[in-house]
Image 1 (cartoon, rainbow, N blue to C red):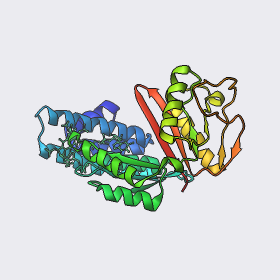
Image 2 (cartoon, helix red, strand yellow; image 1 turned 135 degrees about the vertical axis):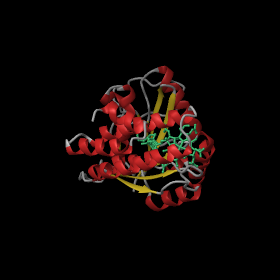
Image 3 (cartoon, rainbow, N blue to C red; image 1 turned 135 degrees about the horizontal axis):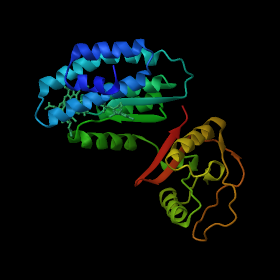
Length: 282
Ligand code: B12
């Protein structure tokens, strides 16, 4: 069954057609993630029809039921991939939201790529996220939230994690966005000074090794940050000959061997998104 036929059949709630179509494609050896993407497109059609008043809650429930049936064999296929453990993630759908299929797929895909996922389920209280982070020391926390009405619950969960979390002194190394441009480096350095005051941990930018790979930079620098923890090393900033006079700290020009428990990795300005992610040792 083709990509569009599968999405259309699910959109039209043709249960038998969808179940048979997915079965056929699994048997033909299609990539399960590609099949899942088509199923997801079908769910989008259902959502749109619900929004337009063409479908009601009973159709949403029916679509959910069909999805469950076809997701099971796909999840099994994905879970059968063997990989080495790379990281841990705490995952859940936030309080007051019971949508769980998207989260389940994220869990399955991550598990099949070496991430140990602690799945807290759906309608998860703030305290449960905090308790799981304390217990499992994950490198990532993932929150699923499909309802606009529960955005505040997501914000509250983040606030609860922050309350329970780290202080600037816990950061052992900052992998800066550091583009070597006045526009970025001055603003980033001033922000670091404002947050860390006099106790600024080693800061370096590894872009001189990897180039500025735009959207991919975050992923590359996240890996480099994780390696800093694994190797207990701070990587240097190479090719720096001049430092802006108003910046009070200098990046190391050689690799440092120091204890690194938590790394802050900065990625700024991609499509207007500014992110500082913290990676921690487990
Ligand atoms: C199935 C469904 C339900 C099922 C959920 C069953 C279940 N056990 O999960 C049921 C019937 C219970 C349901 C109930 C409701 N639903 Co509903 N539902 C849907 C529907 C049709 C599909 C969702 C789905 O499963 N998609 C398939 C999965 C695979 O895709 P996904 O969820 O998008 O997940 C992917 C990404 O988002 C992402 N992702 C998801 N989570 C995470 C987490 C992390 C960490 C990461 C990295 C990525 C990630 O990766 C996933 C895989 O690609 C959507 C429509 C839509 N377009 O999404 C409406 C939709 C989400 N529901 C909606 C509504 C309004 C409701 C109800 C309020 C209806 C009502 N009047 O009662 C209730 C709310 C109940 C509650 N308190 O939560 C609205 C939300 C509108 C809004 N702006 O808030 C939608 C958008 C429909 C619409 N267009 O109006 N729903």
